[in-house]
Length: 324
Image (tube, rainbow, N blue to C red; front, side, top):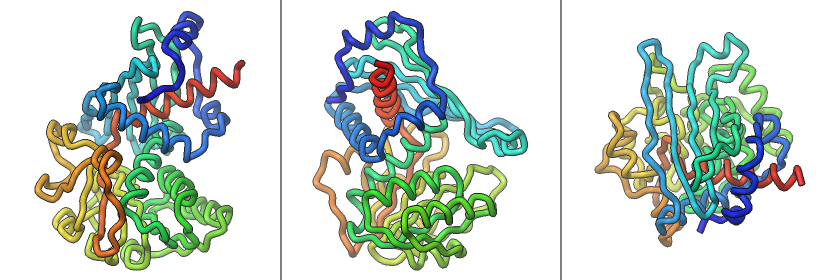
């Protein structure tokens, strides 16, 4: 079950003034990727056993291209209701703001009392990388040595850092539209002791054991990535809702997992044809699924509320502990 502390202790905290945790505060909590992955897996098992409740992600797109989304999850074991609202707006960059921006509320699951307000950017970055890592643990070659990044923004960096802790990666192939992002990935690769090579998406996919696709959502872009480029046994984490991928090429994957099948059923536009879906993240966690070198695999996902709950609860407990 998902347990981050007794609900009684949490409710005592809730009776005090709600806290605000900025992205900088959350970053300074020094929560490891392994802790995040473990928290997410516990939350997934909690949902499977009926101890965590979550609503399907809601999303809408405005006429001018902004993408708005929200999640809701609750756990009496953790003592929380977590609500997150995020916007993706490429015009933010001209304002000096992240393209993806938002906030979260933590409420007491019994009383509804507001316990904390969090910036959502750090949580979203590490939660998304954590979800990919949960899937990669089952679907990617444990001996993976190389990773291709299609897109070189915040998610590319968070995924590189998380997956570098799990696999013996020594080479990064990166493609992206912005020079600044590619330069940042090159710095992170050097920091992690890896070689770095700027490539086209096709060059990277043909070489890499693991692929992470994190191209910013843009309604005006046309697909340009072909799943047939991946080598046999490779694993792809597709976190950009498949925007840059040629949908007909998904048939090249032998195993395709989404984060939540029920969530996909209520979405206006499914991420992938249901006939191609092997299962969901819960199946990977609770079933005996392991790497098969003969099967090219993909994890295509939007993000699920239980992931936000897991990371926000972990961060809140850590912040309370630090404050003594």
